Image (cartoon, rainbow, N blue to C red; front, side, top):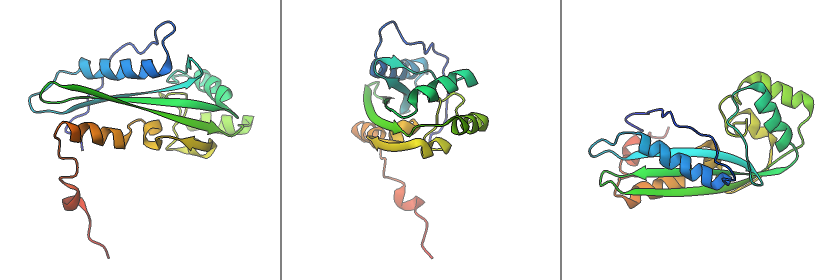
Length: 179
């Protein structure tokens, strides 16, 4: 569990001709650098970007943005990149990126309307949350499910272990006895 969660206020606008993968990497790095490091703290920052070809889809803030994303994603494949940046107590900065291919079923107007009414899309890259109702739209996924959710656990664990953080140190203590 994190000791603290800090929201950063950075400009997330993609640069001209910046590819989706590069946007995720840059934003993750900028978020990490926007936080003041604390002694002996491991600082993690992440960003998720949904792309169709070279196009970066927004983190939908309005229903119109979410509808446009869902209309575009309906019946087709897209990619989701999540970059995780770790700043270790030593000051070392490391980064990992996941790329996941997701294919949506063809969405009818009633499905899109119902999803928009849920409000679950708000603030989500590509206008959807795979861990929620939109999981029912997914026909195929190749890559990291947790990367699409927003924090690729395997890659995050590798980053932390690589810098000496005892990731599995509390697992046995946290295990609950069986019936």
